Length: 482
Picture 1 (spheres, rainbow, N blue to C red):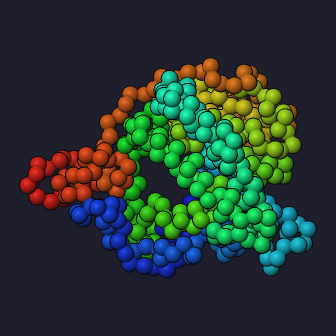
Picture 2: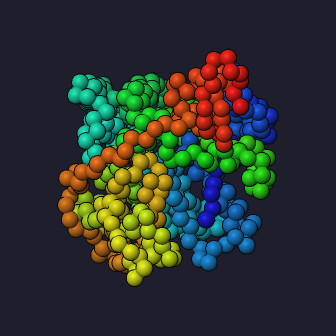
Picture 3: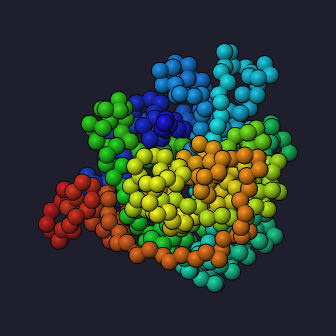
């Protein structure tokens, strides 16, 4: 299994080693809000500015990796890619580009001297954003009506947002027009009309759309006090536990990994580059998914049904909008229960989670799956944005069944062209009870976990911190934080 930090300057990846300060809060005055270290250059021109560019870089990386490091070659030559969140863009974009290069290699038109065919096997998408116009309306509907009985948006907010979405020259129309304008544009568009676009100024078509129709909606949701990645949790969500930030920031771990830079979860440089190219609004990822399916690549989608950020309602719509050859059959297939080991079951081997064996214990219905042949969509119950963190047994079962060519609902049937699930056409009748509301727990390397009141104390250094968690609040005059 290979973990990749990309585009360049995210995670441990870098271009030019640059000493600097990682500022968590510009208003902070304590050593808890600023961290000195070594990072990439933070220059947006030195990283990918779009999914298309990232795919190009990934293909060249793969060509180099599999050529220069043959001792890492797996037992077979199959390559699979599992992605999450923005992976709804990355996954189809990268895999489709790989497929295009494979076709060029096969017909002798490849420009890459000595380029090697890469055997593509499976694309996995976990709570992914594939197409904003297709999935966009669900960001209004999900907070208003979901299977947990939680109404984050009241009727008046819902009505106003739906009006703004559906009215002439509203958000749906503006997003669709922007996407159409981007369709024929150069992939490395940087905020100006390009020769490839020809007909119109892309800035005029797309300027303000993301802020007014997307960012403002996310801000409105944030003011409702609920977590972006889990509607059943508070805005300052303590889950998934953020231990990785401290772990990856420790000197022994960095030395063991051989990395010369400090870990950062996201890159402002990459974000700026992608915003300037309107990559979020670009289309083509549904079509890319279709090309992969029609070429024989397996595609499996799983969505936690408590996630707002890339919610399952929009994910289901995206799955039904993939224009592959068997789209009609997929839409006609029903949902079957997705069986997995109960959350407290400890398997005797990894195969216990692939298909039921005598040691698998009692299975539970962990979700609902629609599947036709190599394509599936699963709604996973009681899971937020990162499904494996909330429901590891269910996520692992889906992963293993997808990789080993078994049906996703049970793992008992081999995948064939004739495989099609049967059952209800939708799953809205299945309701769930929200979990107990967890108390926020401030982890200073991830300010989003901290309430406003606690973070104000962190900025002033009026807290006691242990293992990056705030464990005590100091009274005024007690001295700086530690």
